Amino acid sequence: MEFVELLMLTAAVLIIILKPEKENWAWWLTVAGWAVVVFMYVGHVSTSILGMLNL
Image (cartoon, rainbow, N blue to C red; front, side):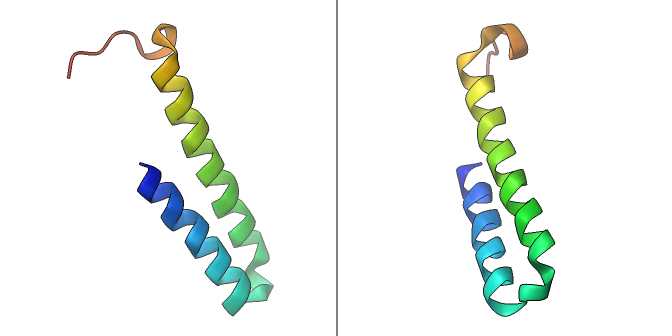
């Protein structure tokens, strides 16, 4: 999942460099990348949200 977040941030940077008029897309990709990281962290450290999982 960290790779997905890295790809989203890379896409955001490329959008800003190549198509500055699409800055809103880049902003939302960045926010979505942060949300993925926060969700992964909360899911990892909190057993009350996801419970104990047996994989």
